[in-house]
Amino acid sequence: MVRTWAPVGETPILRCKLTRDHYSVISAITPTGELYLTMRTKAFDSAGIIAFLDQLQQHIDGKLLIIWDGAPDSPEQGH
Image 1 (cartoon, rainbow, N blue to C red):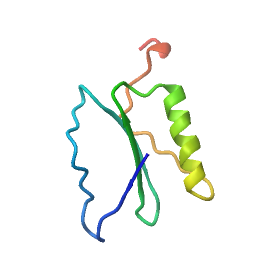
Image 2 (tube, one colour):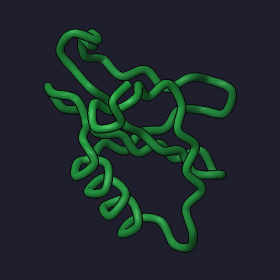
Image 3 (cartoon, one colour):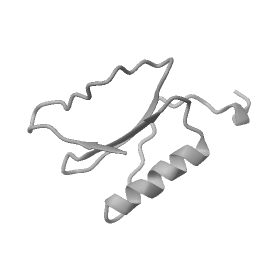
Image 4 (tube, helix red, strand yellow):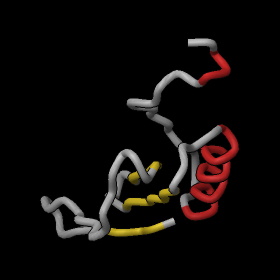
């Protein structure tokens, strides 16, 4: 997990080459602007997402609000 931040009003820049063909990224941002991010060379499956959320709960107190954006349907759903 990577934690990064930037001055108010400036987007944090991660200096590594990311392409859709090679990396899958999952991230979270706190109300105070802290960014938590992890990436892998294969797509995230249910176990990978649960592991990220478990690790996130170790760093953030309280409840999590999950917003799922842009995730394709899983093959298990038959779509």
